[in-house]
Length: 633
View (cartoon, rainbow, N blue to C red):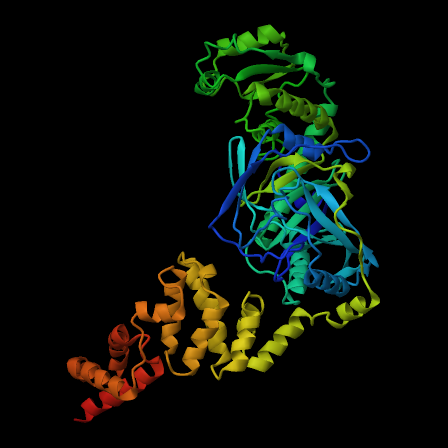
């Protein structure tokens, strides 16, 4: 097993950034982009592949069709309508989304087209009820400057986001419609050579540029990176979908470079062998012959009325288990391939006997298939509706192994690996949208877009620091949060310290989220009202986190209800003085022993009863006053 070195493989990476736009409605209807776990409607569909205008099927669509999935959709009338259900034609394009896409294209010096043509992109995995995604090419060309290097832009598109996957259970896949149709911009960059760290810097720079507009959605899932990776002399380009975090991006690139270079080494070994390919003539059903096999996996398959077939691969011995790098094997690749047909995996000759399959079971296969010393074989068990599709894919994958890296789409995993998702789509995937006419872009719109190019990330942070007297860390936190507009609104309407406002919005809410509470329950209106109450002396600073906690825990629906549920009431100075005097009189021994240092333990005692009813500063002031009184007497 060789040691992998990233610098020796000649990796090229092209980034595709998908960023949700923060608008008031979806791209082609008036529904607001609200996510909810409550659903008021449900329906079921089964999508199928159709031929393109040229009479061709898209390979990715055919692959999805072969899974024979039924799709169940869940919707809420507050966030989806007949457009999302594909029961009504699309409405007019959201003008706010169009304007923002033009601003982003202008920011990247991209060449904007004078007319935009809506297209349909075939997608039949169920994430679009229509069987396609609406997308529009806005511009081509341009660049982003990353530490003095110009990284080219291939294209910028405005398109609909997909439905949210809820679950995949056997032959049924479930989606929520609330995210379907939310506008997003797709930016495809030119492929570049470099380390994962360099690619991460490019993604970070582009993300900062998008967030500088203050009009993009924040949070996990709102920005996704698709990564196109290839290695020198490796064959095809592989697209990895669903990278949501920058740290994950580095791991994905490193893993995919190692995987692809490992496949190149496997191809080199195959090309130096006697392997000449395999055909369906080398496939034989062995269901009856293996009825006595003691493997629990095989016995379960037989109980489920699955079919068992064996595949002979001439002159392929040792190739399934050959591992040029740790974790990179052709056997593993094929195991992942069949899992996307809903099949648990395959057995191959390089790992048998194992899994309860014994020597006599292997001898049956060798005899039936006339296996020679240099031959390999695979065993697959699956329902009759799936097994032939899976075997066809296995044969194609084995035969393509001599070429190195196959063109395919893979899915990023949380730990930084990738798994097979589907074949790469072909040119027949895209065709014109017949329900929406071409959309003109006027010179006036281009001028407005140019005039609205946002300030750079660094300029915006400097402005925030100077305007609100924030330190750099807090300025970056609030600017990079979903609360930036709310922060500026509160700071302009009240006399409350902007540092305190930013800390509550960035730190307190985040900490409550980390403890398992739901920030979606806390609306901007209730946050703004809380600071207004603080400004007017109706609550203390310490009350705000208590109020937010009650709302985010689902115990209260409003500020007033949270105040009632947490027994928050503002004490006047006379009432407060009376309570502080009692606390100090009850704890004279602490004061006599610790003198002025008694402020620490007494503050803890006082806050148990007074938290949320008075400011910490006022409590501290009155405690010190009473401690001095007792010490003087």
